[in-house]
Amino acid sequence: MINLQLPISEAAIRELKMGDEVAISGLMVTARDAAHKYIHENWPDWLKPIMEDSMIYHCGPVVKQHEDGSWSFVAAGPTTSIREEPYEAAVMEHYKVRGVIGKGGMGETTLAGLSKSGGVYLHAIGGLAASLAKSVVKVHDVYMLEELGVPEAFWHIEVKDFPAVVTMDSHGGSLHKSIKAKSDVVAKRLISG
Amino acid sequence: MFQYDEKALKDQVLELIRLAATDLPKDVVESIRAAQQNEDEGSAARSVFGMILKNIDLARAESTPICQDTGTNIYIIYIPEGVGMRRLTALIHEATSEAVDKSYLRPNAVDSITGKNSGNNIGEGQPFIHFEEWDNDYIEFKLMLKGGGCENVSTQYKLPDVGLGAGRDMDGVYKVIVDAVNKAQGLGCAPGILGIGVGGDRTTSHLTAKSQLFRKMTDTNANADLAAMESRLLADLNELGVGPMGFGGKTTILGVKMGTMHRLPASFFVSISYMCWAYRRHSMILNGNGEVTYD
Image (cartoon, rainbow over all chains, first blue to last red; front, side, top):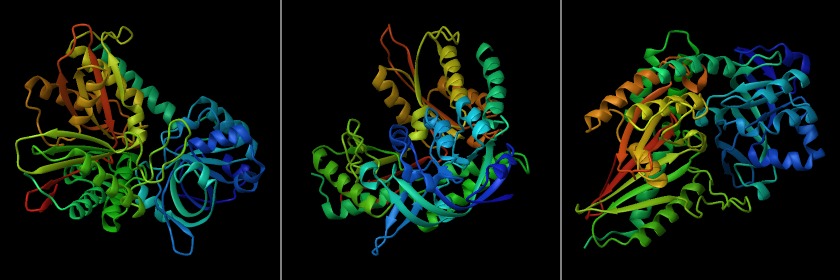
């Protein structure tokens, strides 16, 4: 298990390899479909200090607001990442984002982007919402809650020992590609059976 | 005439929602446990199952959602003659909104034109409620929460499919299902459970597929041909090696449940409703004395 403390340098991220199991601590931000669309249309400067040398978590949480107005995460597993494929490489390069956490992996454009700008794709376990919410120790802030709604807002969160596996690295390695290549062979055999 | 207490029933439906969101059914948990034992010691697949089982226990113990995507809430409700559907729908809406306040459900209803989230999980077609009248003197509520990740890899084929060499017969049905599961990889939060609808039109084919997901993991299809096809698919699909979360492993699919509908001579649809491992479904029976039992 490799401990990753955010913010993290490009050099440290480039040391990670496909298959590495990591525990992430520090500040990161959630962003999913509507958030990525918004970024792509506006490229806001206010996201720079939040995203630089940090990570994006593809997550639409179940939250609870306390009487003092503060928030906590009740359920917070990853959502499917491939929907952000049209945006992610550009977003990572623009804001110097070092990692994206989600599920299901991403495509060729993102994989090339990871090599170019220095980043990794980290796979969290889908449906692990109760457990992963425990890794979110504090909700620091929320942006665009009114406009985007709870699942789609930018939640600026502090995590501790958030477990994930590097499935796409900055050297062109993708676990998703290699598993798919193997299953394609089996599927072809079964179908032509 | 069947009578019920509205306030009590609202709370009973709220409890049904809480159970569905936080308490994975026993038959599903047992199936996951068996799959874990079947994976190699020290493998990624086995470790993923370990974390999944821990999460299931944690969600139950703390009464928090197993998965943050509390999905489309799909109700199938069987009512005795004379029970009003509009009143039951209103009660379900009330319970749904309260379930959001209690963080059992995520506000999950988004206006397709404006992108605005309704905030209470209620919107056009949400939750989805289907009523059927029956001869029994009690009401049964079946509820399934089906998340977006697995719904997005669900699909529908039209036979013949030239690219796959899939003809208009059960062999063709088999081929398109293999193709769908291979394309899904880990994206639907594998290992999945497949509800399959063969025949019907575009709509009823999908409905047949989804209805299959209300069956128990352990049941056997009453139709011998379908039972044989379910077993064959289960064995073969697990050869794909996609594994839990798509990390590789022996478990790609936990179960296959098939149903049929008569089709038009011109149409031959095969619908595949992919359900994630967080296979959340519970049911509730309300009798005339106001007593409920949950399953």
